[in-house]
Image 1 (cartoon, one colour):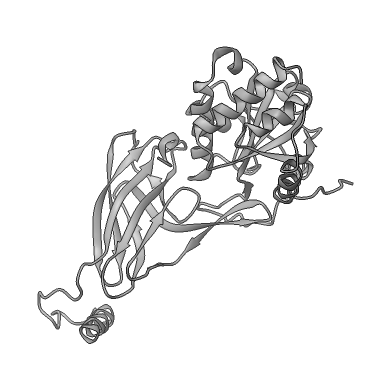
Image 2: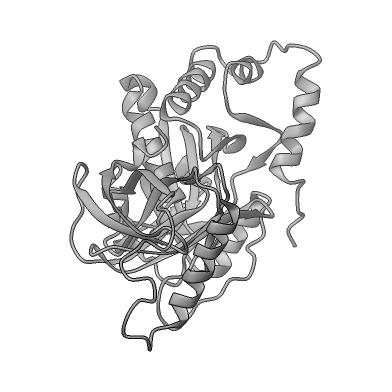
Length: 157
Length: 211
């Protein structure tokens, strides 16, 4: 099993570099099992018109660690991943390039911690609306989910 | 020259040791025992700084917060995460208060984003939470002075030519009693119900038990 997963990972690596190839070397077969599960996706009802935060739980019940590479949404011009850290009692926020989802674990994007940021919102988002969000993983590929627009006062519920 | 005080978290830890040893007949101390907030072993004086409120009027932090319990939060309106969640939690908390308690509580948002936030922007932002909240901002020097009065130093941060950037800010709510002493800190993760409970206990201690 482990060897097969490794092969799959290598194929992903090869495929990622093989943009010049007109045909996929493995035809229509999935390169890797889509093991990552994205649940509880939600965005805050924005209090400034420009941007808002995205939260979700990302579980990896599979046999290989996976990596969240990017997020995107038709509701935003630009999306990115951020982490928060305390420095001298001050909250700092900085962008991160990727996020590893270890085997058998759930990584939460949650208030005050790791989160996605949707920047340049293309429409007004009201509480109760749903927003399409796509999370791109190294192995599991694209996972598109609906994120509920949430009242910030309920963000920790 | 501003003397730096011990950091609130460290002060709170030492306080924990001291309160564990015995009760007190002081109403503030009794209230503290029923609150989820962290009590500072040495209260902070409200900084003597005059900032500008969301209507463009001068707001004297010491003068204009007298006779009330003040909940102070530092943030910035471009903040996507902690700031709106915390302000929304405070707004929910305030809405849970009995009217008389509510009349004793003032919420003060201090924007640390001297570059992007102006009174109009602060006003618009606050209106999404509770238009009765006061929001102030000022020059970087005034904001630094305000922060330093409460034991914080603004770390350097980058302001790019375009695109989003963060502004470092304390993640706690400060609670001041009417004599302008910052006595309590509440983490940003505190629930609206806990905040409301704390404000009720403190307000009753102050106005009914004769603190």
